[in-house]
Image (cartoon, rainbow, N blue to C red):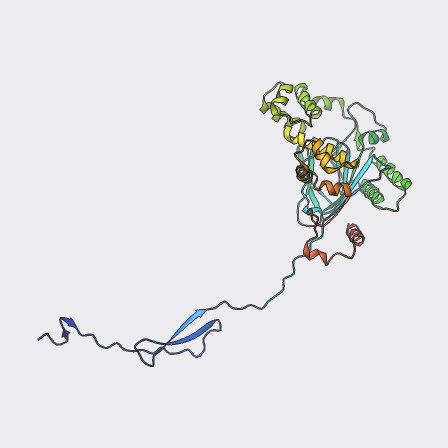
Length: 368
């Protein structure tokens, strides 16, 4: 006989004690109760809970109010010596380094921005005026998401030099990059406003432009002979620069420019950076955009301009034009843009703008 307590050599186990879990008086609200019988134990229950996400009250969150981007090019065919651009809410716009054939000056009327001019970068704010010489590589972009706006004038260099009583082979240049002259700032805004006013007469527009030229007399001067010689690029680099300007429509290679300058590629690129504040490739693209801009002002079709100015197709011109000038060829021709660069007003803004397009433009212009 096996010893007491052993069954077939194993110790007999006592029957397990059945414990019935006590149900809590109240379970937390995010828990769902489910009772099931434990198998083999009649009358016993267990509680299984599963977490469910707490339902939050639906709350409408309104997007922040952001001013629409408004850009407008202003011209009078009877006044080919001037062109203007008015921008409000321009913090969405991005300008890559580029240049103009004209003397350019801009009045900052909203916000603040960085101003790159050749090798120098400055910060300009509302009330400042930026001054840009022909051919100077520059870019101006907002430094925050706040509204940024400006009035820009592009003045024919020959006309401006003659009006200021200057005459020189190298042309006149601005003696400063920026100024806080309040009278000049106001003169730029008045001249831009005269071009924007459809009721303004030719006599009124010509008068305000002549007054603006008077304000620029003290800021425009001929380059000093010593400074011109000291900062002038070497003759070999000038040959490459001239080759670029002569054959900008062709598919130029770096070897072609190196042959003109009689130097290696590294010396050519570093020379371009030092004296022209750009690279050979960037200078070629900038030249093509400048020529395209002239053709568009004459009313030539965009497709023909793209083909004649060395771009692969119309889409290539569109991308490059927008990258450098923060606008599209279509907008440049039509002169007016409201909304994003894609040509569409963002949804939350549609109900915020006051009425028809004319009212929208007046509303944005009056905010400055």
